Length: 365
Ligand SMILES: C[S@@+](CC[C@H](N)C(=O)[O-])C[C@H]1O[C@@H](n2cnc3c(N)ncnc32)[C@H](O)[C@@H]1O
Image 1 (spheres, helix red, strand yellow):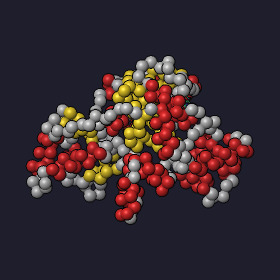
Image 2 (cartoon, rainbow, N blue to C red):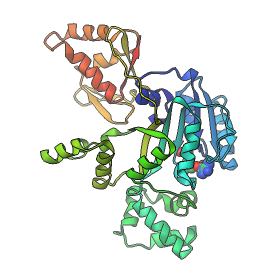
Image 3 (cartoon, rainbow, N blue to C red):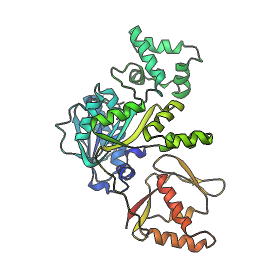
Image 4 (cartoon, rainbow, N blue to C red):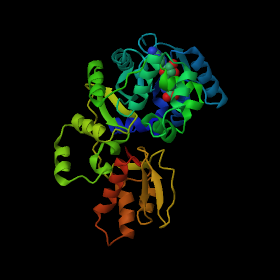
């Protein structure tokens, strides 16, 4: 999963590529290590740390890393509400599905901030209040009944098939929560869980001194990606401040159960990258490899944002040529020579589009 790639999260927060071998990375609330395995794999040479409250989960995580032969990871049993004993600060902290379970999310965010280097990036996943409405309501029902796993599963299995929760459970989750005890407990009987609205995401980040940078899937939050809006609606949408645009989208399309996003220190200003085509090069993202042949002879690529992009055979050589060895100017000149009928600026425009989609990095030569 692209969100566990240090180079990608750093680049998409700050517009600069960093060598992972120089990075210190932390998986905060690592659970049984599904994330660490990917962090380790995608950042060869990095110093990787992981912490969790649960010693049982840490043990499984350590076994996983050992079984995969992934080298060293420093494990710490620690409460996210007090990370003071954790050594040093980190270039990136990955914290997926944890802050909302801590009982004091603002304190957890403050602790994460205290462990983030001044130009560090924080990847967070938080639960959405609207997307998780079915589970929030059922959790309360089960609380009122003082139900355990077996009574809770029976109740859900007995719901009318067109009940919104039954549909969510069977159609969206394939009944997974009902067949796995741990999933059931995590979904319906979790002792602590805060479900967030966009307003709450932004206010908790502000209180903790953090700055929202971007969603991992920006296309979900753009009106024109979701619907063909009447022009006046599109115009008013575009004129709203950032937070209100997101609020509007979460009310209009309440289908995201989880918010995936990047944050930094509140005072950090991303470096505006001057991209002189003679001094910069392009490299294909680690995630641009899922390419397969399309019926029209083109190929399908998947960049950092997980969107499938169809590239026709015409532009394929241009993208294929992005290997980090030639300057943008040289790559574009070669393609322009083969396509004299096209305006010369087209090649650079196509590469810039690919960079926005997460298929390419731009990097200084
Ligand atoms: C839903 S799991 C997520 C695990 C992992 N990040 C992943 O994506 O697979 C939540 C994890 O948060 C941990 N956790 C909950 N409260 C915590 C706290 N106060 N301090 C540290 N870890 C905590 C739990 O032990 C659990 O491993």
